[in-house]
Length: 161
Image (tube, rainbow, N blue to C red; front, side, top):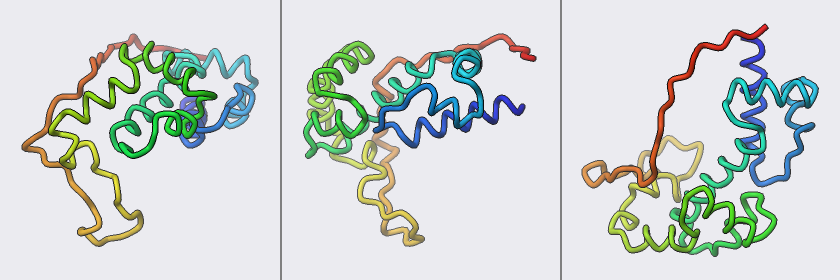
């Protein structure tokens, strides 16, 4: 249980600092492990390496940004999410989503669903308020399926020291 809590703390640290260049040492420090031991444990618990986990989160956050921040250019979204250049971002994005960032955005801009609140449920909301008029809720009657393949895997129970 202690290991799970420490790995979860490291995952939370990664998620909070996606726009920064994180070293394995700095993430391992959050979990209070050596970088070598942490790398093995992280892969066992999470099912992917620290760098793959971080890259996946940055790409998924960028994909949301392409839809939600339609007035922001792609390079700014890439830089905001920790990519060194728009070229690096475009290559990684295409490898992960099998489409370019521009095509991904165009697909949603052409869709009638981008004008409703389904993909923009948090845009413009003021945090820390109880005023229900400050929040935008999705129109569930117009809900469309998530456009990417989702795979749920059943894993065997892992017993660790």
